[in-house]
Amino acid sequence: MCGIVGYLGDREAYPILIKGLHRLEYRGYDSAGVALVNAAKNLNVYKAKGKVAELEEFAISKDVSGTIGIAHTRWATHGEPNNVNAHPHYSQSENLALIHNGIIENYSVLKAMLIEKGFTFSSSTDTEVLIQLIEYIKNTNNCDLFEAVQIALNEVVGAYAIAVIEKGNPDQIIAARKSSPLVVGIGENEFFLASDATPIVEYTNKVVYLEDEEIAILRRGEELKVVDLKNVQKTHAIHSLELNLAQLEKGGYDHFMIKEIFEQPKTIIDCTRGRINVEGTSVSLSGVIDNKEKFLNARRIIIVACGTSWHAGLIGEHLIEDLCRIPVEVEYASEFRYRKPVIYSDDVVIALSQSGETADTLAAIELAKSQGAFIYGICNAVGSSIPRTTHSGSYIHVGPEIGVASTKAFTGQVTVLTMLALTIAKEKGSITEEKFLETVKELGEIPAKIGRILTQNDDIRRFSRIFTYAKNFIYLGRGYNYPSALEGALKLKEISYIHAEGYPAAEMKHGPIALIDNEMPVVVIATQNGMYDKVISNIQEVKARGGKVIAIVTDGDETVKNLADYYIAVPPTLECLDALLTSIPLQLLAYHIAVSKGRDVDQPRNLAKSVTVE
Ligand code: G6P
Image (cartoon, rainbow, N blue to C red; front, top):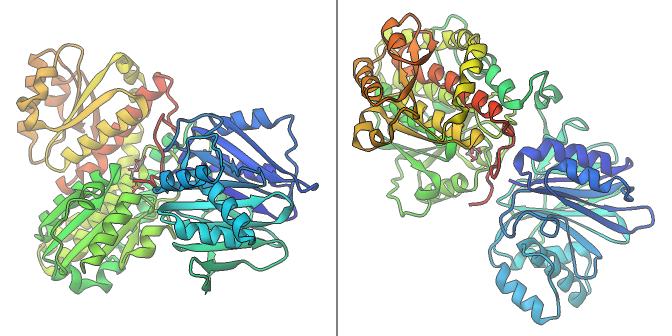
């Protein structure tokens, strides 16, 4: 949420900052801005409402020279998206400029104090309060910028990743983090700064992930120095990035989302590589094996997550209860963290998160940790905060996901949860050898089966256009396909702005059936698994009321094909793996409807990829 980029080195900073902002635009895209110190040591700030392209347009005739700069793309929290509220923010004297990701919770108290001291404010942001506070401290204590930042951050309550530069000093960036990620890239005589590694990867693969309450001092010609809020100098490990540039480009597709949908046969193979053996007879997640006793003795497994990851968690609940016979609860992290949950020291908490940075999920982890539970993270972004704070975990290894609507991360999470359940079940003896082998083998077939579904992309695109008129959609599914229905509905509303509700099919008669008329499209997941006959009855109920049925059917199922107005076929698979297939046509359906409606599919309004505020 919000993107931060910084550069200090021998090159011109502006092109690097703009390119970096484009790479980070998926984190927020309400407004953007840049601050540079030029050769004359002037501090120039340019900002524009809207996307990074608007900023570039605005800056065309401006002085954008300088080999040091900071830049920001915003997802508004305090204050509407406009030029004034965009970052960077100047201090009162315009000698300092700050970019900030996060929320300063005590900003109103600090603002009142600063107003009393004669400071005036032009924006309604919490960020402007922080830079004014830093300037106030710098002036009253007569100290340098680093010290002023350190003192100010000791007074601040909330979350932040910040970068500050000052007029007259083209040789220094001060940066700091708490509960909001910040990465320093280390090149030859140059530093890069970013809220994730994507803007850095084309320049260097050496990075340092800052920890909470650490301040980084980036000085020209000097080594990186990291000091904490209590002024203790910290050692910092230099990590090697595994990202490559091609993963961050669209590769000929119109949008990242469709590229990522089409990547799924490969990403599932990447996810299972080294975990399922070549013969397809064994599966093992090392994080689970290393902590076998924790899982085998777990009183309960609690899954905490948000958004799409929460839907993957619901499938995890089915898998673990079905295969391992361990009770599972799935919680919205945002609710869990505030509702005084009962947590036992023999509970295992699984935190699911694509970004590894979601503020609510991180807070839920801290709560469970403080009560002695064992925390297992399942994340995509390598080196992000959740994998660094959990006791153990597994990466899903699907590569960077740039489209704001999650697709390949969802199937990656479900794949890891499947392998986790199989690993525990095998160790626990709660699965027969026959069922184990059958499931592992079938998991190995999933990538090819997804490939077969993707061949229907053109047909789906054609009939999707018909539904651009719709104002509402209902998605129905049962068992493993109920979370798949929820996820399908979420995909549609996120990117097309059509209201969509996912429901357990049998619950339809308890309410949503009242909505059905001849304008209501109803997506029914009706594959030939456990609940097949019952779901057919639901289709009949929809048809009897004039609803338009789009059915997800098993290949060769003529009964449902004949009943439905439109259908998309998926290959047969085991019930416990069904959602890995049924989610794919729903991703394509949402994508094509949104494209037909002319929506900004990769950057839908009001959303952000990584939600680092609560
Ligand atoms: C945001 C994203 C969703 C994502 C959710 C949870 O809302 O737009 O796509 O599912 O956050 O994110 P996480 O990174 O924790 O999976």
